[in-house]
Length: 260
Length: 335
Image 1 (tube, each protein chain N blue to C red):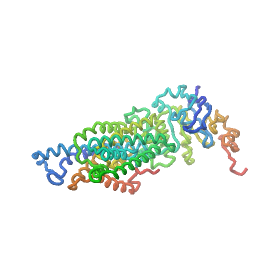
Image 2: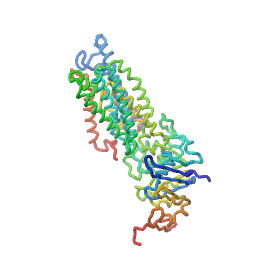
Image 3: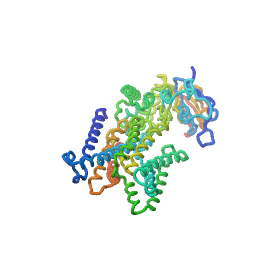
Image 4: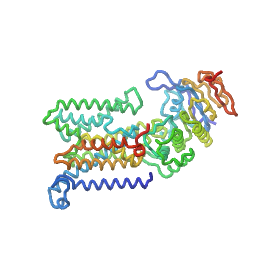
């Protein structure tokens, strides 16, 4: 099957900086799967998501989405194709949860139109999917960190995207909320959505089908998670010795902080 | 918040505004302070001319002023993701003040020339803020724009200070001070009608894009992911907000606090969704400035500058809102 997202020979430098974040970066992300982009802080994971999203453009190289060049999509088409759950999204106004989730319908609405009853139904369904339907009338500013993340995911789901990008989706969450977010990502992939998330925690990649290991703008390894998730690869990614163990069939990472 | 509640509040505000406009025709200091009986209006030709030539254009200008400032304030607060922003940001108000001062002191002009200079320099203020923000090498776009606005405003107010210092204290300074305080004294049909097209067009743009404002209140990356072109749409809304402000301020002078406080109250009553808050703010703003202006021309035998009244009431209301417990004032951001 052709990849959902294909980057080839990407070169990218932030404005006004000499040092390139990516130099000759190429990678494929398969359709309908969960892909984790794993690496230490500053590896260029978020930049990579922003390049796929299109808010950043590479200096050279090609980005294909569904085998079409990104430039061939209009802004609204891109909005229907890719949803984003950004890291730590600011919510400066007290929208209700439902009003906030309804914003996900924007790519389907002409610029002067306001959401209609059908959009409301899609938003309600998205809230049900994340289990927040009872909170529809609550203010987003009164939500806990975990609830907020679930609502943000509901907003992205209301967008009905083919690709869902999540930037460090579990970084501030407790164990139970972490579990719910990971479960939602798997569920979306089962529904045919291509899920891509970044994380600096190797343990989270347990839910991923595919794994991309990054360090300083380079992909160190990419491929099916079972093949890539090795002690050698992880040690190289993080620059410290890392051991990989299997506990109840799940991959677990051991870091060198404990007694040897 | 149900649709029914929203419709009820909006209709209530509309009826209130129209009712106040009707009442304001009869309020003033002719023939006697405060109230003019209907019989006088029907029989006295002087009263008829007064209402037709003085009170009506002024009532319309006051309503337009409040509507423009409130709409611009709501839009700017959402575009800049900051509930404490008002049209005075971005160098618009200070630029307009400088333009007016320059024409009064430098050219010895008044009336239409002063208005044109104010509108021109208001836009110049925005242009300078924008150009400076593009070159600031620090922070995100919003922060850079605000920093640039502060710097440009400070430059213009320094300029105003110099012009005040050199102004003729007997002829120019009083006019200058009166303009800085903001007033609709002596507004004519010609002035009101000359700003009407720009103001209405700008208000229409803001009202039509009111749901879109919600998207622009999100982080850039998120707004982008929802299929918007954040920079382009923000610019369109910004131009509309500034055009409305510059046009009306060129007639009224600097009237503060309306653009800050009215959107806050509208949000507390109707929720943060721009789809609801903006129409509410527009109606409330019109009613607020109309009441203030009617009081300004009625309360004392000499005119009270409108800007003093709006600042007095606005600052008091703002202080009350800010010390009200969070349950009663949920629009105050937690972050």
